[in-house]
Image 1: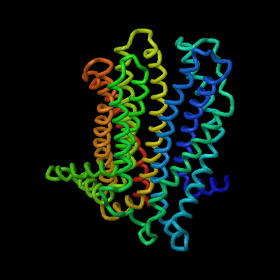
Image 2: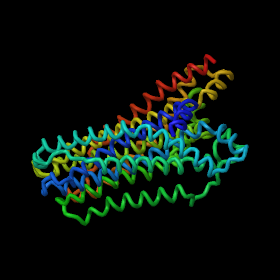
Image 3: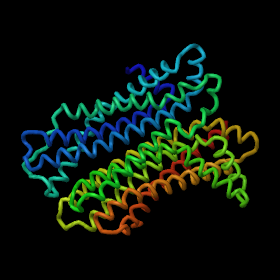
Image 4: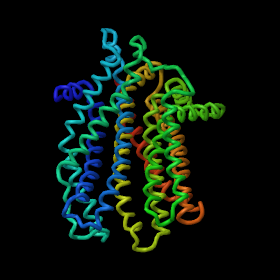
Length: 441
């Protein structure tokens, strides 16, 4: 196992770092929730505190596991696109698609397993911090001490390890099944309106919107309104992120519609790239949609809760806890977005070198990258914000009697600014470095 991890790190350092970071942070978050669950089930915990200390980590842990699974699927898919020549060579000497999937799954498991102990330690520490915040807010009895035990935190780590293996199997399916004679180019599978990916996206979207709409039948003071709306924002964001290729297609059509306007060499190159190789910006669209959708929806929901709940109520006390968890999840997705952007840009050094040979300047190439990421960012944030608003509207109706609170601009602007800064900042910094290196060589 260690040998597999070392081999992957030696030959594909960027892929190993991206995979390891996603697994590490995911383990820390899931372990923190299972540590709180262990505390809720401990004999030393006051009986009155057990409902919160069991329900809260189960609900939040479910969100995190879903996000980790999706993030790992996307990360594996992105990193494998830089190994098409290697995998094509394996296929040419007789490796079957299933054998390639087993190899990728074993490598992913090995890299993730290296993060086991750091992730477990981070989870214990994070769980203690969250419990301390809950205790200081007066939501639980001071006599209820932190008692995570060992079994449940270990179970949390195992869940993440299993999720990474499942994600690697799913994420490597397309690359492993590609014909080896087409390994140098992008996969060009059959287009179908009923493709499994689109069916999954529709199912997830229906589940998310259905969960959000179901709160219309609940009382305003029922904690289930939050418990159902929170996962709904996550599911809706995931469903939209699965539709990243379609969102990139929308960006292509917008650029074509604007083709009559003056745009210069950089704009012309960006339009050609998005039309010819849309998979280059797909990782950015995927993670931006997830980041903005989850953070915007959750922050908007909590903002409504804070403004329209009774002062000192359980809902308001839970606000600071929810903000903490949202920040942690946002950090997790921001790191995943950064990893995937860096990996995607690093694989384009040969492209940038070829552009230099045919006369493109470094400034034009950087301008092309900037316009690509701007187009990806626009479609991502629009889709994510629309999805978040749709999920929050029923919550707003139940809590306030109207829809106006669901359109408060603050949470959406904060989430959009965060996503834009990360996407544009990483592309400018990492893309500039790759472009300079390609121009030199």
